[in-house]
Image 1: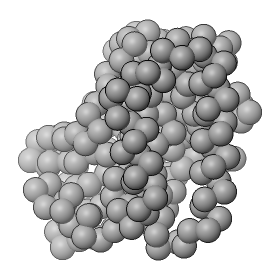
Image 2 (image 1 turned 180 degrees about the vertical axis):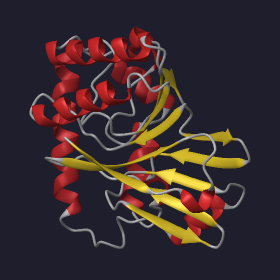
Image 3 (image 1 turned 120 degrees about the vertical axis):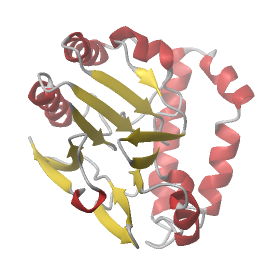
Amino acid sequence: MTYLFISDLHLSPDHPRLVRGFFDLLQHYKNQNTQLYILGDWFNAWIGDDDQSEWLSSIIKHLKVFTDAGNQIYFQVGNRDFALGQKFLDQFSGQLLNEVDYLQIVDIRFRLEHGDALCTDDVSYQRFKKVIRHPLLLGLLKRTPLVFRKKLAHGFRKKSRKSQNFKSYEVMDVNQNAVRDAIQNVDVLIHGHTHRAHVHEIAAKKRIVLGDWREHSAYILEFEPNIKVQDLKLKEWLY
């Protein structure tokens, strides 16, 4: 069995190379009894599980081939695709994880999350997140016409890019106190979001930051069930 962790692919019809890179990954790991964990921002924007765009149909087809071969897919929402739900995942037997989830592999306890909740110094984003992800508001948004949600998603992306221009590197990174709280009862914390791929040593524990997918490569985490904490390393995936 192979455990595979990725995040921040930001797939969209505007970046077909990233989509092809994802398909290559699925093909490469198809026959390895793979448990694939996608820790948020799988898509650059998600307007609803009822989106039946042609490019999404192709992705679903490849995902179904992957799971039909005996592999499993787990997904955790990110700040770009927080509206993605089990309805979409059901099309290829995927499973939706909690926003913070845990995984026990032999004697190693992992904490999985997208990573945006760790960026507590970014106060304006945390306020926005609390509002936009309120169950009542999210439920109302899902009932609006698809064309309205497309415009809304475009507006969110534009606002996000603009606000980042005025935020410091430190503000958009994780808060160390939040990290210490998150890793307190686990051996390994795995997250994405910051696009700063690295393996951080915290005493005998590790914080593993997955990389975002760029034009030709990404940093991913792959290991077998008998792995030791000290041997966990990121791997560069070229496509």
